[in-house]
Length: 169
Image: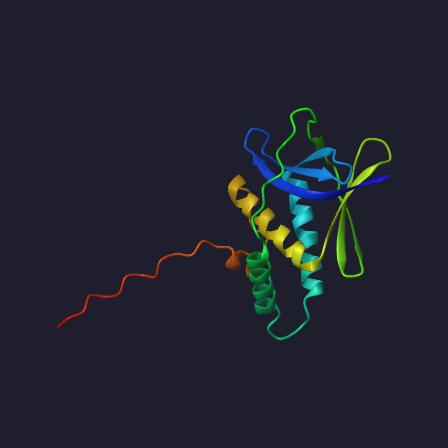
């Protein structure tokens, strides 16, 4: 039987050099998973492919992807993060199964035995989670070479404009 994850948070652990996905299941049970760099990169690639397919093809496809990423990020209202639970140590994942259905993406995390935990995203929620995952890659100091330019450009910190040249009177 699959547990449905209702709310999740993502943390980077410098000690483990892994991401920890912490969630609350519909049953109220806390669940947490370790995501290695290898698995995180594979997951990011698949999430990005999903939003690229969900975005209409056009001559300005990358600009549209960047715009939709920014729009999704702006809709992502901050909420209280899910706190890690000391009584339930994270499970080390070797895979995450993905399924597309009716325009949504479901991530299925295997649990011991035949059970699994599921997390379903709309395209907008997928974009929001991509942004969260990207920021965790930055926090971890992990390579960003698998991330598309349209993604990286949207989430770069804004820098101050260069100082103007001195005026001569």
